[in-house]
Amino acid sequence: MADVKDLGDLPGIPEAARELWRTLVSQPLVPTTELQGELRTYRQSLARNAQWNDEVDPRLAQALDNACVKLLSTVDAQTPPAERQAIQAAVRYFILEDDAESDLDSVIGLDDDAEVLNAVLAHLGRSDWSVQVR
Figure (tube, rainbow, N blue to C red):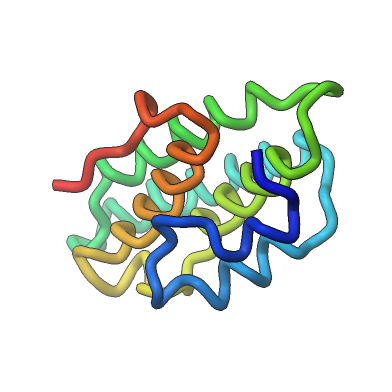
């Protein structure tokens, strides 16, 4: 497992997402319950938007949400800080609507979110939880 300072250069993070990723990975850790609440709120927002916005891929949104929920369920008191930091940054990247590619403005809007999440999953040895994009 990499140190927290090494996470900014995590392999697999898309170049367009790298600056935001570095910002997210440097943020202070927050309680898992806070991330779960943020994720729940974003899940509801995406579901509402998918009802009227054909640009939102509800299948991919659900797969990303499921993977984030799984990741957060692995965090406990023994989780190393660098691992928690990577998980938190991946979840926060997903719940940011306006990241490298706006989640709501393009049919590929969630693809960068999947790439970021998959890079973290690979880093954590959980490639079996990877999210498939089209």
